[in-house]
Image (cartoon, rainbow, N blue to C red; front, top):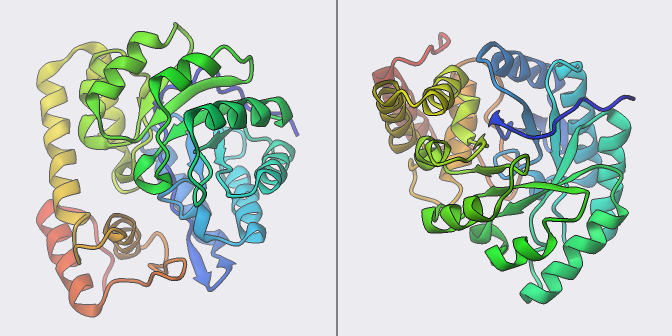
Length: 307
């Protein structure tokens, strides 16, 4: 299948949730509904199997199924990039082969987790991976999850590899983003994960945001990006304020590390777009937490389906 061009990545590329009908069972109808919702909001691409997509918590079979379902839903209208982060080098390559066969534009890999790595080992890992991949590679710095940061010096050492095409930084550290933007050349995009800093980062030269909240209200995130690109500070402040309100209201219910993904899935469920089932070991909100979420969404003016 032909690959949809993605070079260079830019704009708002939501890390799409993985809707589950049951344990280890994909809800393909919800994949279609969510992709349609995202496209209606004007997003510039879709990231399957990221952290918000619970990629590392899914079986390898289900990951492959999600890739194919997302590609089918996008139907070549948007580039799709695929997370291949894994503790196993071989499993990453096998999922990359699935992505390439389905027509994905690129793959995304954070450092392998569990065994700690030095930066020298990480350089070797990324270069070996890029050499073996069938698709371009987007680096992913997610130290809160992997416990291994991708340092600016490591990026400098590997960014000239012809298959390494850019980076998503989810450190939340604007000093790191500044350093990466100083390092990056034209056509080698730096994108940020934390939506709370996306507007600022784009103003300073970042190529966009891979933002979890764009699953919920994609048009607001694309409008933020366009305002930042245009230097329209009044519009940027307005959209940034809305994004801060969404994140502060919906991502901390239950005060757990998993609350962000729980909140987004539960909110999408209330909007009628997918079930709120989580990949185990996690579970959906309690009834009390779900009621709190509904109240907060109503306060923010989200469309909620009838109970």
